[in-house]
Length: 316
Image 1 (spheres, rainbow, N blue to C red):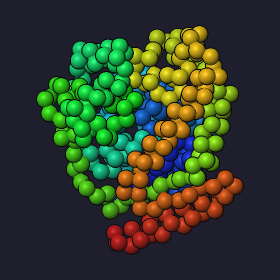
Image 2 (spheres, rainbow, N blue to C red):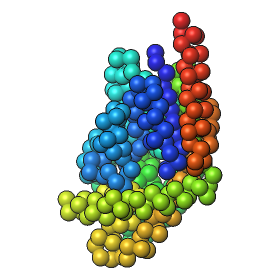
Image 3 (cartoon, rainbow, N blue to C red):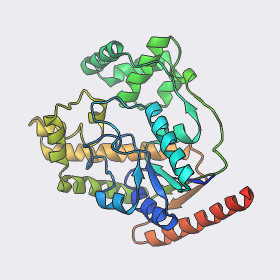
Image 4 (cartoon, helix red, strand yellow):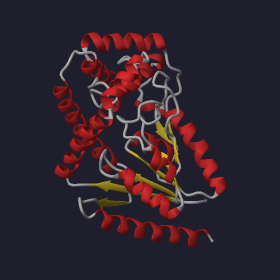
């Protein structure tokens, strides 16, 4: 079986560019591990690879559903397994890259998730509670019902808060007790690499990326989604870049204030991503630095070629 290359790191660290270069070198395909890039029509705010990048290297697991369609980590597992099997059959090396740690854990460690189907009535009741009393009330409720699950969910991550409480209230069992890993170690053919940057440099790149998104038409993208009837009640529209700019499009908030809020929330998100991936089985970290990306690329390439060669010798 071909190796699986996993490339992770916080938003704006430089994963996309590096993954494309590696894919071109190895004639590989890229599998996205981004919970927002699965939605069609949400391109700028999710930093989706451009059409030109997709022409150069085939990308999978993007543009899977409409913004108003439910998409869970279990759905992602199913899509991933199908694509991965197709690539294996064709002898194509896969590079899995993205910033959604739970998606990566789900497909590399065989994570099994609670299976109760969504309960629209219960979900609506919980959402009303969040709207009237705030996410903090739901988070406190989760802490009381399942402290272990609460430790792994950010107090403002409304999507995951709702799902965890929905499962607990529907089954009467702790959400954390219903999640388990089918295996505790990565498959032997997995090469799990992490990318990082100095904090001040990463934050500067995040701020610059937000400005670039606005220049590319993020505000217009949000307006187009609203015009199609997609509103803040949808999990997809709770994504960074969308929930901050919706009030601007609606004339309820000034653009400058929303942009600063978006930059701050994105920096906070990057910090949470780093914390998550530091707990994952990353075998080697590489530090990127502005002006020295080429050196880092060569080090990663050399490392991968050595690991892949070693795997090939073992499998003979």
